[in-house]
Image 1 (cartoon, rainbow, N blue to C red):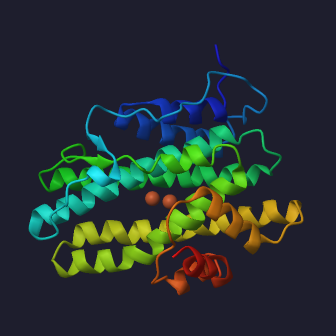
Image 2: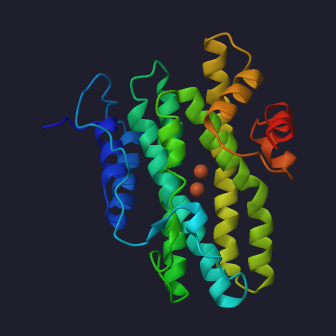
Length: 271
Ligand SMILES: [Fe+2]
Ligand SMILES: [Fe+2]
């Protein structure tokens, strides 16, 4: 049997299809890691990492081009928005624990894993808060179709930790910083304070996720003696399809250590 380790726990979080069990295992793993009851599992060859994360039968996963237009007004519009955010957070859970499992053999300080286990815990919390909120609104995660494009970022960057950090925290999660405040504002002005408060928590946490991404991206670049900004431009062009869309939340991005020299040239050249 595979020895209990951070690698094995992270692998099994990604593989678990029951979403409550996935969340519970993420919480338990973070507790055990921070109480120093788990070792990394460096050098272990256990079961292979999942090609695709474990998922329940619903929601139906559709290619982005096949997604129906979602309502944007009234309660059904709010539910559709929260449902799509719930789906994004579930993907974030799997993407983060996949990073932990996949890159467990990297020569990095233990604090690297402290940061990403913390992120994996917070993504599980985000998913769980939104899932609960959908139920309070008389809906459930799985009621609507969800798009299947998010895991592609994991596949295209499975070979290279710098590429993974460039695309997931520094492109996708940074994009969250650009769009979340307006979403929270819209929901709040519609009178749904409880949902808006969840978005506020997510926004605050995500700023730190971007900061962890920026910190470790610079760390890896320093170690290889390469300049971080050109390395970032190159990795994003090779591993991310599509433009970086302005307007950018420059203030939140720079608070997270993501200065304009990283993203502004990509918006001009790709966009
Ligand atoms: Fe999140
Ligand atoms: Fe995040």
